[in-house]
Image 1 (cartoon, rainbow over the protein chains, first blue to last red):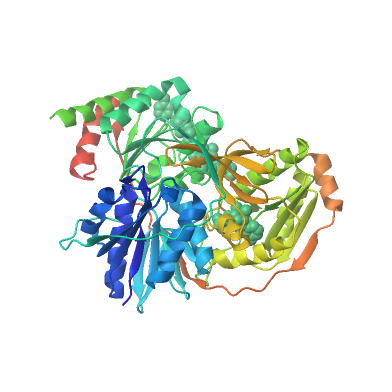
Image 2: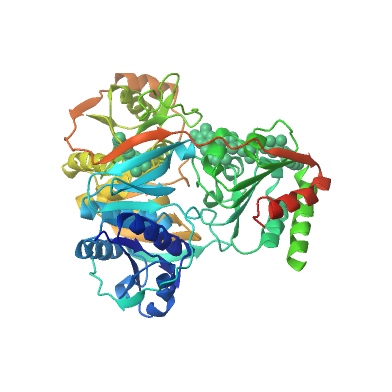
Length: 325
Length: 249
Ligand SMILES: Cc1cc2nc3c(=O)[nH]c(=O)nc-3n(C[C@H](O)[C@H](O)[C@H](O)COP(=O)(O)OP(=O)(O)OC[C@H]3O[C@@H](n4cnc5c(N)ncnc54)[C@H](O)[C@@H]3O)c2cc1C
Ligand SMILES: Nc1ncnc2c1ncn2[C@@H]1O[C@H](COP(=O)(O)O)[C@@H](O)[C@H]1O
């Protein structure tokens, strides 16, 4: 049977949204391959209670690997545990989320298992009984269809792209004894940046560019973000990151993050090719720009020509009114 | 301690991608090539380490065809002491590329090997940590800034939701993201000197590729958008469409 292993990421004992997407993507892949999904969740003691939800999203078995050494993400420990689980289970495919953690972890597991890895994929298919992945290249200016001749097939999936739905049949949750590696990485400190949602995983992104004029004006965008509410993050063009107005973590584009939110607001952003590369796969794109010829209007589904300092506050107000209505 | 920086020749980020007749490569006509931007950050980081006394020699290394000599010259012009080209053509299988690089690095004398966090052509974001794993060396990815502290390297990683600070013992592998290392421009003197410095060329280890590129496709054009109007008066219509047509609010 062609089993698929879904590596389900948790943070501080809570499942990441991306984990459900990995399980759902794995369930679709497993259906095509004629097998079932096992979700693997690694973490510190007390994890079991938090990950049961995975069983509702398509995992026939949820393997919970609790260990003190896994309480924090240390790459060697996690890579060793996942590679061992993949070997022991005899999986046809292993899927990761292309989050910060998944991007760090998956290549290590691939090297330990000696199989290639397709990263950041936006579609998975089954052709002639074997998995096939579609992944963006050139920051989304093109898509590559790739196939691996090695087994297991390894891929990381881009957040927000795969739909997750609850399934009728719920799987079982079991404990799993992880193999622990020897961590050489020593954790020192985590400095959280303001704003809880990362732009790469947000469902709505409010991005500002040089048209914002001044970093102090960002309160205008924060107001829109707060009006939209949960799942909304701020983004930025490189021009404002280079100017030091915003942190690089917010940069969208070829040398920043590639994002695919359901809704993307480009505010005071001209739409340079490197910026478009990072956001053109968004669901719906809205642009506000005072220049009617700005290239951003060529990719925007909806555009408003005008001064963003007049348009955006009104937008925030109308969206807030929806919530009340 | 010596530092090796792995760099890749990639199309300029301005490039409009067209697919070649083969269907599995881009049409190279008119394409300008550059050193992948994150690799420039990595090279800059290495040069600064040398300038501050932390590194003795900086080598730039690439796996590429003869045209990649151009990017090695750029590395020399920026200030690299040595450049090495492994003769070959990197394909879509990142693990195969990682094996070739690891085979060379295994016997090289380098306390620190730097990579870009990703090459902006294939966007695989995998080769650095793969090489480290193959060499059984510690690796820190997505590093915006690092410093040596005794026999360890302390790294500021850019991760979802914040900055994580970790350290690993040397010898180590670090992949660099955009952060503190805005690359310098090559000086005229550097460019002239680069022309005279030797370019080492070596046969690359032969590693079969197992990830096959079946087809390269352009994304569907986004249907032409609509300008809804001018100024704040257009906002109610926008909100209505976002709710009723796009169904995203
Ligand atoms: C190697 C390389 C990599 C790059 N990578 C990236 C990347 O990852 N991401 C990225 O974004 N860029 C990237 N760039 C830069 C890119 O080429 C552009 O320079 C950048 O995206 C421009 O940012 P911007 O749209 O904010 O600024 P501008 O191009 O200056 O646009 C500002 C816009 O604001 C509008 N405006 C001004 N005032 C107002 C107002 N009051 N109301 C409404 N609109 C207003 C203007 O009409 C204009 O269209 C890269 C460039 C290179 C060379
Ligand atoms: N052909 C190559 N030669 C040398 N280094 C490379 C090559 N391909 C990738 N790299 C390095 O690996 C990093 C990550 O590449 P990738 O995993 O392909 O996104 C790049 O930023 C380079 O530092």
